[in-house]
Image (cartoon, rainbow, N blue to C red; front, side, top):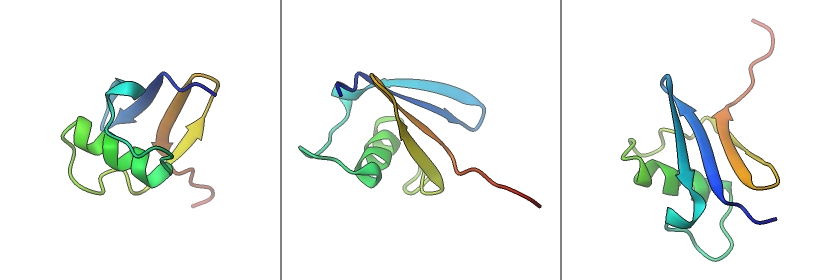
Length: 70
C-alpha cells in the first residue's frame, strides 16, 4: 500500500493532507497519524482522539467513531 493522502472531515470542513507532508515515524500507528494531522492542521491536542482511521488503496480516512442505537 502506498498512501498518498489523508482525508478528514472535522467540524464541517473537509481537509486533504498529503501523507508526505506529515511528520511521522517510520512505521506509524493510527495514534501517530492522528497526532501528526492535528499538528499539521493546528488542531487542539487530542482533537481526533474519538476518531477512527480507515485505510484504502491510496489514502487514509479519519472519521468519527460510528454510534449505534440511542
